[in-house]
Length: 173
Image 1 (cartoon, rainbow, N blue to C red):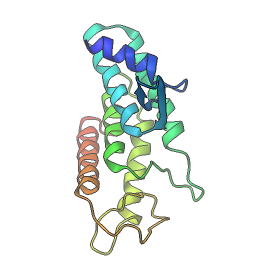
Image 2: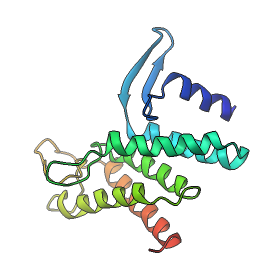
Image 3: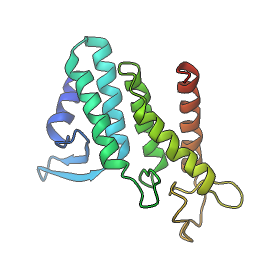
Image 4: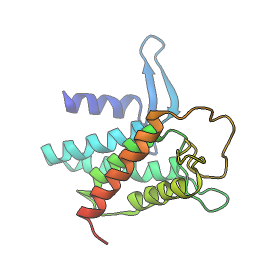
């Protein structure tokens, strides 16, 4: 069933850049073409795990292509030189999980290092006076619209840092 679900996602909601659209609506036979980091991150992880189980190289290759696509789609360079991700920390953390899963098969650390840079920018420049990190990790757009601190945002940043620490401990530079 894992292979069937994976194949369905690739057929129905994968874009040509190997990132994934948000949803397929059977009743309308249409695709919601919004792209979120978690969709691609989860498919990277799925590809890694299916490769580990089956040994079929297509899963590893798809995971590699999705990681590259995600870097281009979700991490364009900010005009001031910052790397960015969308203002959805809980989704972004799942992309990091995909990157760290892929590293087990492909020790190309550029995806993880880019993520680390974004996370460190958030820590340095995108916190309020009490230390809470804004959903916008760039530090350039600290807006009054953030009237609430969501546990989902803070826990995601915490989990991302824990994943980074585990990865760094396993892969010292």
